[in-house]
Image (cartoon, rainbow, N blue to C red; front, side):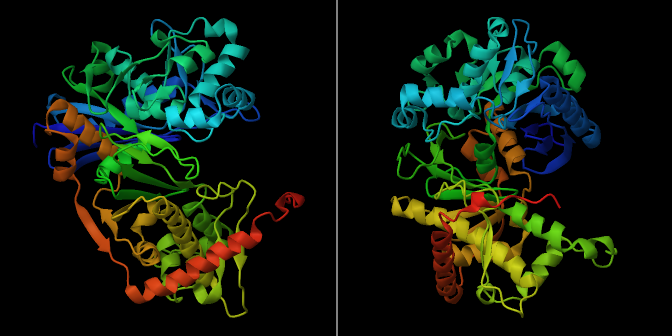
Length: 513
């Protein structure tokens, strides 16, 4: 086994995953730990910060044990991480309260106060964030200042999840520019904490971690951290990145004109750009990329793969109860049914907005719709209509980018949806842009491992790590005849949304069946 091993960790919302790889990108071992969030009241979402730390320790120990490697050969580790989640610690680095998870919406009035104080345009131009939401870290800090003032004075550092784990490993307080972008108190141009916002929140710069670029060494492990994880003390801890950006690195999306598109529960795209694009009309978040000096836009949709899962759970219940090892109603089996239906699903059109529409519509009121039902339609029609609807949602964002003179050369597919040849081909045929899959199924962890390798000298740069580790699995090129057909289907999708926009959805209440 090589003496140049790297660990990439992904601290997600409900799970922490990790991979151990060699310098050629071969995955030596994989591990994951799931955890539960706490919902102590309306709009509240918390977790004990020790859950993140204990999960990190468990995953690292599992990676070492499964691989039977010499811990001394593990050169470095780095994190991919969720954003916005706030962890507050005292002078000893101990949490003083539970983490306020990014999903926490208690600070709605504080978000409104920030909006009124600074204005949407100024916030966009400085922070890159087009919306002021209660999920932002700034809103959470302001809430703590107002509602937990006695605790507020005891806080030594306000941290994000990656910051906290890095400090537990090294004893040093640092974050990275990519993670800091979505806090609402980070200037994405000067890449410093924004003094005006800090003053408004009632904190000083020394209450925040120092800022490094992604892929930069923070330090070696503390003795206690080495002992509990099983790592050698010489293992370097390197700054990682926001999970979307880390996934982009893990898929090789590091140059302008490239996009990663993740169809998981939701849909998210990382559009790599060389300079910030701060356009209120486009209305997309603009983040600092994991590649120093680059940026990315973040189009998104609330529900994507979730729609297919909902359909399976609700309408394949009987088959699931009688499934055998010979034939299971998995997503693969559902795809087989969809493949038998022609493009356009014989006129069945769907809006996949089960929880409102994200970009570019930003319509919280619209709901999911099936239109064009006829008696001869089977389950395969509905499955294909869902796949085509998600492809239309992606394409509408691509059209919005094109209308703003942003050119896209290729799209790299991530998430559970990327394992479907049919879905990838539908998206390529719909957009006319090549869809590409990579060999690594854990792009966020792979991106973190590449950053660890770049920081520790295993690779000469992040780009060098991508060149060596990211390999193409398959390319899906648009069929010209199907492309023409799908333009008609796309127009039908847009027209359906325009017809349903403004429908009085709120007049209808969910039943309790």
